[in-house]
Image 1 (cartoon, rainbow, N blue to C red):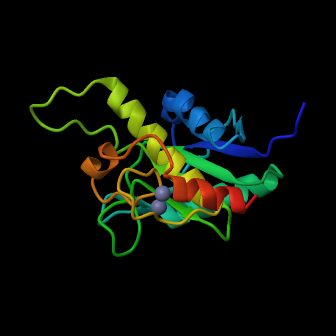
Image 2 (image 1 turned 180 degrees about the vertical axis):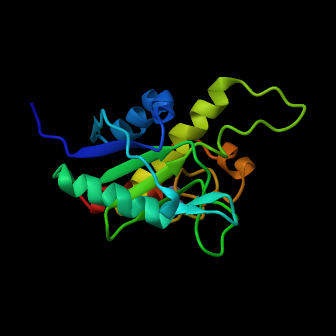
Length: 181
Ligand SMILES: [Zn+2]
Ligand SMILES: [Zn+2]
């Protein structure tokens, strides 16, 4: 059996993080890595919450994930959460990766929003979770943003831009990944 690098997965704040684990695991296996799902949830405190914005601070959540990951002696880590997250100067983010700290956080909060009057099947939400978790894992593995709007690594500013992506990497991103070994 060949050795595969593991990506640690941590549900953050609530058990709801487990809800889309099938998609998260598929996104990790998409890169030929092995998911290592934590059975314990990382809880957040008032410290990570921005009362004015009613959102959690993504960079502080990443620090919580890093602290826990280091205790667990694991490597690259992805936190998943249902709370709405943001970064300074951004209204919200779907996810954030800190490549130096080798940790990401992905929020389902905006990915599960259903536009008014439109029936949206669960499959679409699942596809969004797959694409955006694969996006953050791509960053963890060294990929940067891609200008090809259908590519997983293109930066999505809106839910429409997430839906416009294909669940794939473009050839140029695939090449970059290969050259990084
Ligand atoms: Zn990105
Ligand atoms: Zn690309």
